[in-house]
Amino acid sequence: MAKSTKPKKTQQKRTKKESKQRLKRKWLIIKIISLLVITLGLWVLWCALTLPDMNKAVERTRQPSTVIIAENGNDIHSFGSVYSEVVRADELPPYVTDAIISTEDRRFYQHFGFDIISFTRAMLVNLWHGSYVQGGSTITQQVAKNLFLTPNKTIKRKVQELLLAFWLEYKFTKEQILSLYLNRVYLGSGTYGIEAASQKYFQKSSRDINMLEAAIIAGMLKAPSRYNPIASEERARERAAVVLNNMVENDKITDEQRNNALKMRIGPEKDYKVQGGRHFADWVYNEVNDYIGEREEDIYVATTLDQDLQQKAEKILENSLKAAANRNVTQGAIVVLAKDGAIKALVGGVNYNKSQFNRAVQALRQPGSAFKPFVYLTALENGFEPDDEVNDTPINIQGWKPENDDKQYHGVVTLRQALAKSYNLATINLANAVGRGKIIKLARKMGITTPIENTPSMALGTFEVKVLDMAVAYASIANGGYAVWPYGIQEIFTRDGFQLYMRTPDEPEQILDSGAVDRLTDMMSDVINFGTGKNARLPFFAAGKTGTSQDYRDAWFVGFTDKYIAAVWVGNDDNSPMKGVVGGGLPARIWKQLMQDTNS
Image: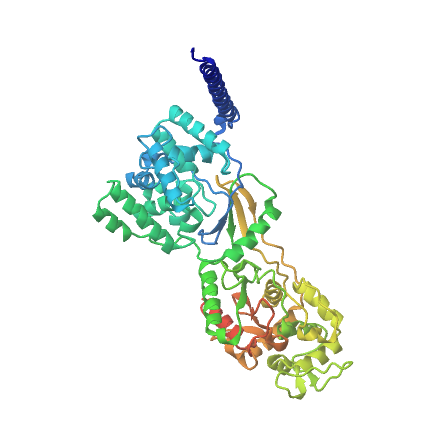
């Protein structure tokens, strides 16, 4: 009986059909892969075609820098992007480039723009930690990113970065690439390039920095805002130690050289940078455009700030408030003027890093009795004399019953006594006799810019003023009745030395009666010698006035010597009451400390 061949033929047909299907799948896979390769190739080509213009490598859109300078020529602060002269890598001490290469790209001289070993190592480390903890970019890739690309972390940018790195390696030598990197890399505090950073942080050329300073700069590359010595010298030194260890591991220095470097000095033998003064620098920076308009070039602004006096004022305020911490006083402000209105010191608060709010020029606080000299000067200009009498007796104005600080009434007193002892009732009666409108007009003329309400309590300083305005107003008394306009800018010039602005002295303008001013000055010296301002007494001439607002929310001392005018305010930003702090106490002592060494 013959065997059937039907199953065999069916199996052959099935095998043939499966073979055709496998072949179709293979062709489909080949087509998909080819399409992906073509698509990827076209996308890479598109990335290449959309690269920035490489001929514009040195062109950057940036904010012009503004360097604020104290009157002695030392830097206070820089704003904007600060660039300096181009420095070639071969002009620097060898340990500078060794520090950077040992930390950023050890195989810089071996790779062709992309280091597959470093990239793979970084990928493995990041996968192990489950987050981005290590980068694998070469110095060449960083140059490509810094010169041509945005910091956005996209696949397109990374591909373009790689293509540009290959182009840079083809176009330039390793030394040229390293020079491009050194002159364009961001190094914190608005500085770009190693020369700008060296001048900023160490006040010397990058050609002259020591090994520790070189390690600090190399360490900043990881996080410029965190590891720069202005932000934290301690963190900068700790990071520099890591860099020096990298140099040892890379056989660039010995253990002994590393240990010696760790003991080196940071910066010049003499400190050429003003410590502090940031509130003043901010105020000046905001004023610059009013003097020269918008500009594209880098500028230097020479100011009136006295470096020693500024640093002394900041330290006195900080230490004084620390000592009075149990009395709920947390903030303060100081303005010191020369008689022509030049700002010699301006402290806008006790800690700029914690609060940039400038209490010297922005805060509005009640002056309390520090406003009383305006009342007495108006009276003196309108025929009153210091020994004329005024009643210090109970007052009831539509239910308002003000009191003296000592809760007593002193009967008939002279104007001199009333001001020295800061009698409230006598001052209100005098204001009513003179006319509150005249007092307001005089205060405006002397420099008070904030609104003054025409109310009976106005004579006691129940409205709000600026600390700077109070200093300016008292300055017109200190200089014999001449108008004073506060200023902080002396000169503005470009990097090349071209002068854009030079201050010319204002024409003297007599706004107050000189005789009345002389009599008031004599009365205000009694405030210090015999009255509420005894804590401000000095071994030479001084005149001033204390001020305390209701519930101890503000405490002032404003006064002057033959050389300076100074306004001191203490209080709290939230306007909460202090614990018994009065103008004749803490502010008067701060003022005395500040003034006692300035009369020479």
